[in-house]
Image (cartoon, rainbow, N blue to C red; front, side, top):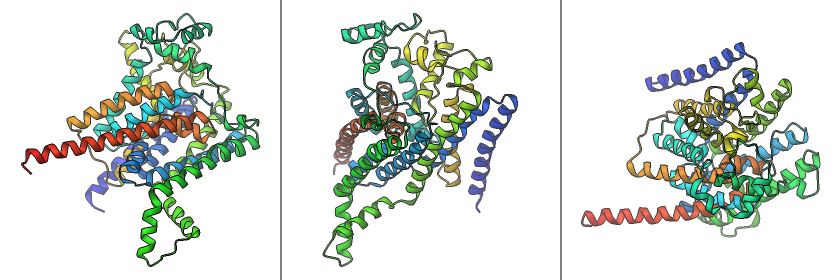
Length: 476
């Protein structure tokens, strides 16, 4: 083993030891900290898998639309299907922490904005987190841009109130929100309370007339109808458009002239197993995401709580709790909201009121990042990615160029806006919702496709334009 490998191993072990010490020492101080450690260790698993499989939704769309490479799109679909299977088991047992989101055209629009943003940034929300763990400073800039944008966007008011439809305004007032939430002076607040909250909340199981946590509803409704069938159709479409012709050409070169249906089945299968790293990462991600819900619900039952805000209050950490005594505690894998809380907490500490809006003041709160459960998950995700990158000699501090930094900021802003409009990112609004039979997840995914496609085409044009300029400048 060379010196670099030994050094990297030591750093990887040091990061792992740090998380072990945090978990053990905090649990010794107060057993309630095990709740936060659940988020920490699943976050570590997510980081390990994301880096190992190079999982990035931006890469999936970019590779597919730009060069016809299907590996990442296939890996993500496999991960969703496996997560859905475990999620169905958890749901049928009555221990699921998942709650579906409102479904309407807003999810499609938000998905388009987010899809464009992740291609601009060169990484989605989860992809930027794991790339930050690799030492990619451009990815760190993306995470920062997403976080700041969200924290500012949720409190936007002033002239934007003129853009609020009267129906939203009146509907928001009818909700009877606490006086501390200034719902009449915030576009985002009136959008949420006056429009989004009025949209239907359902699952594929309920749409079929079945009870969500019944065996029939969880497996036939949410898993088979909501995930397996559309995923199989999606993968068949990917094979037909992008993989079929290369596979046929390969068979012809091998001397086979009559391509049968059975051959196409073999080609379809070869597409699914094309990348072992991606397939393995997808397998573990899917199972871990499902188990995360089960384990956290078990801890909630143990402590007799429905939200971590109750535990924080019991421990004396009442600063930053929402008016309902809650904090952001999704109960499953999530990415963007906790990063917005970092910035929201700092804004409040600087003396600016940031708890009079729905996002922070009514729902998610802004607890100290040191005792925020979801924050532990994000930090551990970065740490897990760093461990895997070190072990595979893929860790390196990479400074962005001015051009890449500009795209990163633009992309982060768009992803931040898209995430807040959809109440989640590529993980919370797509991956988790689709896997749990929530139709709003597919709507968000449908929106991401044209957003990413148009931006990929823009970058193709931009690259050609830059190359022509360089060739012209060199006199060629």
